[in-house]
Length: 175
Image (cartoon, rainbow, N blue to C red):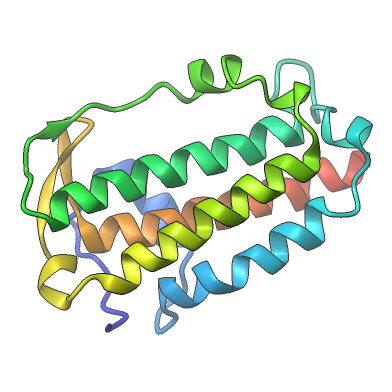
């Protein structure tokens, strides 16, 4: 699979934030393979109390942020599956804050969240590794705008990179 970047028009403008976090010449699949080590290094040494602390009032806890990453990855992968299989109907968006509020993340153990993360990532990798170049170029509509399977691949890995930056910049200083 090539590391051809998605083009403008292959995604909604907000997605550029995530897509641009994958360096030129670096494949998003490689990022997907490497990120679990980063996640486990970041989250694996935290206590349950640390993982339940937001960096500021009204912000998510680390458990909530991790489950948000899992939920988002599942949704992006689902969209990619639909589009790769030729389904181009408009798929609705989701309200991330509602998902987090209803996630019950803080009542779960960090170990259970990391296990769910690992299972989700394994499924995501298997899915994206199965796509041909033709399937990566297929497009559909999600959240009222265009999305190619390739763009969704970049979004999954870039979205996680975005949250790893937030972890380092905002959470690590208070831990």
